[in-house]
Length: 213
Image (cartoon, rainbow, N blue to C red):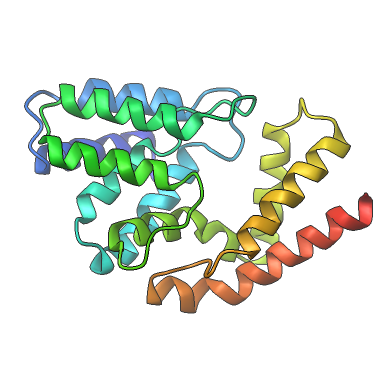
């Protein structure tokens, strides 16, 4: 698993490739501080590392792989489980930070758009950058049953303040929404690799929640 130093090195190289006018290091450290906040159990630097790794794996499908990497860095940069506007706040943070770094306005706007796509993980057909980001973010759903169980347990910990009946109802709604998507994965590689396992994992968790109701 990459260390914070590894992530900071990757961030710095990414910002330099994208034309940053200033030293990206301080803001990279600020982002890592955000990703390490105490309320997080799943949405941690480990999740960030995993999403970046999947973006790298799927980069050949993207129109602008570095825009997708930037969006990965920001997509959960603001994360408060007791709020519903995390993606919107994360997108706004990306705009402020990347504009201050001197990145071109068009790329900043693309990063903002991509971060907002993670609200529903339903990119439009042909949106290759959106497909890569959403597939990378949802790759965790297609892990082994053991890995999926660890993910689900970490999400429950993040929502530890929510009473069990309310959590079951809310989580079941999320799972049904994912299962109702036209396709969980849009890139050919992720579709082939993750779809069957993801649907099995989601269906099994949904059944457990319904049995407990």
